[in-house]
Image (cartoon, rainbow, N blue to C red; front, side, top):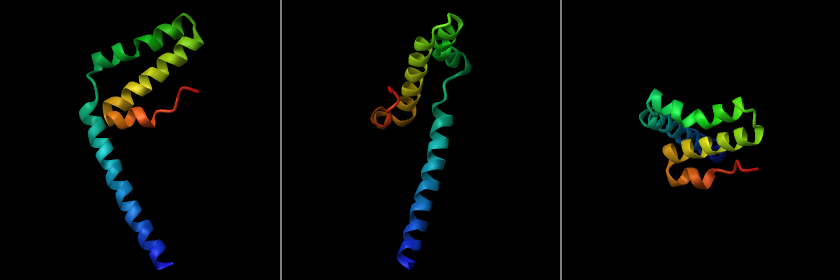
Length: 83
């Protein structure tokens, strides 16, 4: 049981550090407010039409782009939102 507790403590520490690094990276990579509007314009346009399928695809593209911006190539690998 002691080994399991030690492993849990190590994993918790790693996850906490990773979470802090992600937060710092997200804040550094955050686009300017004007850029954010441009990124989300396809979503807004699809909702206004209304075109649910286009809105869904625009949101998925936005999520993939955000993952790529923050995680680089890892974001591309971890993105399974096409379903």
